[in-house]
Image (spheres, rainbow, N blue to C red):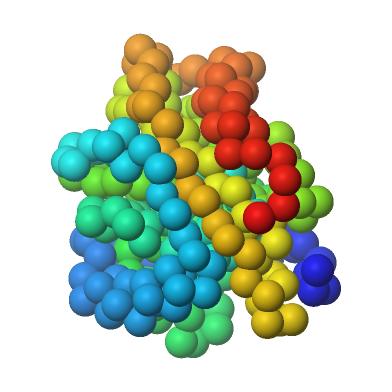
Length: 234
């Protein structure tokens, strides 16, 4: 596997810098999303031979959250390649900075969560987008697992599930743990499986323990789907 850059767990930039991205995301994802999808779809399907299972489990309209495991930066494309609906992505704030990518994120409906901080603005964006009937993607583990093994769920997905009451679709991505081997011109086959939506009664201001409890329930289903895809390397 190729070398991975060290993780940066706290973004030193002020919250005010990221406000522009939240404001843009709340307005919608326009032509930039569509263009990026056109450019990325064919190579994603051909090189990684992406297969999707359970697409019927993703509602065609209405607010919902996709909750996948996360191994690779390609996971965004793997999850969305066969879905007709636009996905709104919650992404770590460190991705925002390089001019070209930042432009794509800002105008493609991606919004940041400020790593290492209690970022209420990110959850306000989540609330507004779900109120608009959007489909969000929030990684259950909160970030990439760098061990090629499933990590541990973070409370964020549990908080969103409880505060919103919208369907949470568990998603297993198998194969992307080896996606970095593209540097050796090896493109592992990738399978994405969408599970049946999970819903939870709305709770106002759930405790952290309660958030973690629900996050673990969601991720238990992700893990079940992942293991069902087979433990062998693809």
